[in-house]
Amino acid sequence: MTCPIILNFDRSVGEINNARTIDVTEWQDAIRFGCTEKKFFHFEKVLQQSLPDKYGTVLMGSGDFHHVSLLLIERLAKQYSASNPIQVVVFDNHPDNMRYLFGIHCGSWISYVANLPFVSHVHVLGITSQDIGLFHFWENRWSPLFHKKLTYWSLDVNVAWAKKIGLSRAFRDFATPADLIASFLSEQYHSTQPIYLSIDKDVLSEEVVHTNWDQGKLQTYHILDTITSIKPRLIGSDITGELSIWRSSNWFKRFLSSLDKQPMISSDDLSNWQQEQHQLNLTLLKALSG
Figure 1: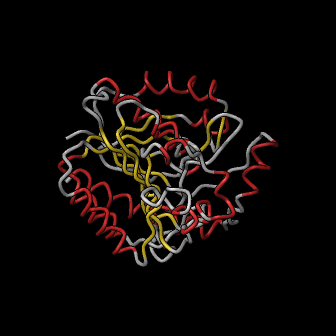
Figure 2: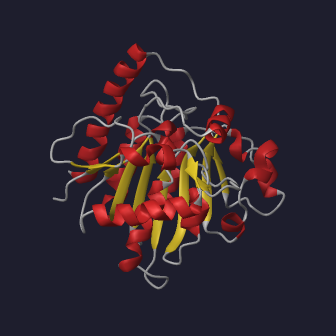
């Protein structure tokens, strides 16, 4: 059994038996939320030197680091190709396929993954964010959607406008989380392509766990059912969505982060909610490795 990896950016991931912790706290301010591509790929070199050849699920802390998933997926280029491709399945309350003019950030990394030659398709499951609604449509990156490399699986977002421009297959809307998961798993039933799974816990309802971001409507069992169904095809996975408090030293990052209106967290809430997060991590890791 391969051991989990904790990329310790923000000290938010609790202690996990048999996990290997890689200290990258010195990179928190540089990488968190977003950074230039030059800085991002500089960090990639550091990461490649730190990671073992084989490892299990990677825990990365706050969803502000979700773009690091791109670097983990890129490592699979050694094993897969356009003639032997993989799919990427992402649980997230946001599309993470938005335009970002200043490099790469936690809300733009999906478009990079969709452009990888060995990735046949990216599925983002559980979106309730208005990022894919009519008033924000121009902020999305259109290439992977029009080229049938990316599908949004959403709840409670009016995406009827997408049908009018030929994107009905890329924008899938459902009445309930159960309908969404059932439709996705039904579509995947006959596929044999390997899958990389990325979980941002902001896809879950606040009744389940609290994160730094606005949250979706899924329950834990929706993710567990999906893992059970696709597990024979899983080749890698990561988890983000921890709670941590951060104030960047960079005024521009502080400004951009403020636009997302992340909630203030008291010290008592932080401690209690991080314990909830820890128990959920253990549940997810058991499902992924058991």
